[in-house]
Amino acid sequence: LTAYETVSIFMGDVGKIPHVSGVTGRGQALPLQTPRIKNVIYTGDIGAVDRRLIPHTSYLVPIPKNIAGIKFYPTLDNFLLNLLKKSMMNKPIRVGLIGFGAAGQIYHAPILTCVDGLQLSLIRASRPEQIALARARYPQSEIVADNDAIINNENIDLVVVATPNESHEPLAKAALLAGKHVVVEKPFTITTREADELIAVAKREKRILTVNQNRRFEGDYATIRKIINSGMLGEIAEFESHYDRFRNYLRPNAWREEDIPGSGIFYDLGAHLIDQVLELFGLPNTITADLRLQRKGAKAIDNFEVILNYEQLKVTLKGGMLIKEPLPRYIILGQQGSFVKYGTDVQEEALKTGGIPNKTANWGMEPKASWGKINTEYKGMHLVSRVETERGNYVDFYQNVYDTILGKAELMVKPEESRNTIRVIELAMQSNVEKRTVKYS
Image (cartoon, rainbow, N blue to C red; front, side, top):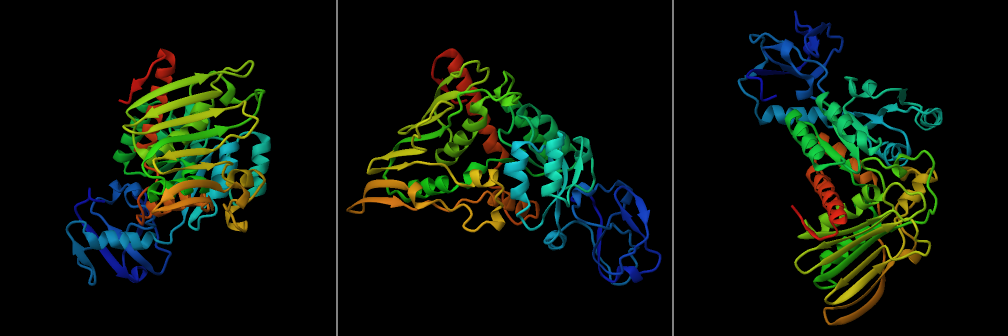
């Protein structure tokens, strides 16, 4: 909006003004059929108006300057900004979901539809079983067969990219250039070069770009963050985090099992662990990694151990596919005590079985048997106790996206943070190949 020098605002019964016709898009004229329009914006060069700069404005009306009741503003000021924000407060954000595989079905569609104001308008699904499921679960959404049907649809405000990792960068870039806000499934991209390019495009296009780092919104992570920040363990000396699974066979026709860029569990699960650690402790000084293919016939990384070194802190991140006996999810050792937590957040399993956050009682609440154990000296007392796990809620991610688009909040997952996660992955892979510790750079 600041690109335009003249802006006029009329508040009132626009439909009764003689000789006024509405204009939308890039100069297409149409009659004003709405009798009362609260907010009308006029610019001298109506044909050059780009609706990406004025989101959610239905009508752009050229009004002669001599009409009584119009106050003329030579430049955009706080009044106009506040007016636009008010006009957007209750506007639905129309969402197009690209991809309806596991990520789209489990981590996006059932979550974003729980946010009042987010409207799942389009779903791109390709396989017959995906199309059937999408139609059954989201009958109000239109199913489309190609990405361009979403990216180039002028009615879509937010594009969600939930596709194989190699396609994240080109699809997100195309959506940004088409004037859409974008959510990308993690990992953000394959390389930091791709991440930097997307961040630059989003800034240039003045669009919101974020990454679905949904594990920040899990109950166990919220619990350890609170324990660390409380100081109950004293200065943290060692932090260990696991994603342990058991599947000793390879899934057929699964791209994550293939030898292609961005495949394997390090990009998949490691991206979550790294993101959490960077939010807790910041960027490391050095990185040491051991990445392996352990299962018979494996083509992609299925085991990792990464050590991030800080000044006085050692962080160990581990994940594998041959861990049948459950190991701790978190181990935190401090100068005054320790905290150990078994089990994983309950939301993922609930979603896999068809649970919906806003329709499920006690959503995100973990059973007492899975609570972590603390053993510490705190304020002169020796404490040994179970710690109730905080409530997790993946919906908070999309609520924040919605609020940020409306200008009511700041992004909780900034693209620069997810870019740093990709950089740690790159350096860990370098460390593994060169069999040495590398500095973060």
